Length: 68
Image 1 (tube, rainbow, N blue to C red):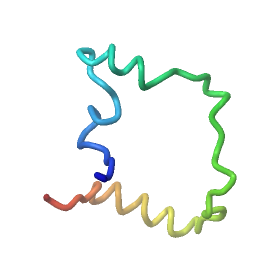
Image 2 (image 1 turned 120 degrees about the vertical axis):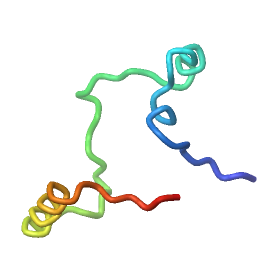
Image 3 (image 1 turned 180 degrees about the vertical axis):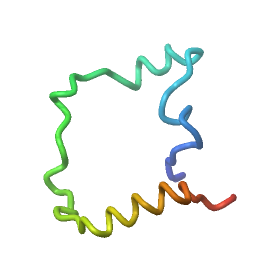
């Protein structure tokens, strides 16, 4: 049995206009009010200093990704 994985790029998440018929059967629009955080989320508290350090690093260096 093969494992289902996302493809690369936004087209893996957002279908193109040419695949609208397929997308209509897989996706639906819901009101934003129906979206809520997962109550089972393990991360409940965040270190503010670490977040600020991460933000500074992203501003200075951008997002680094490995080349495949």
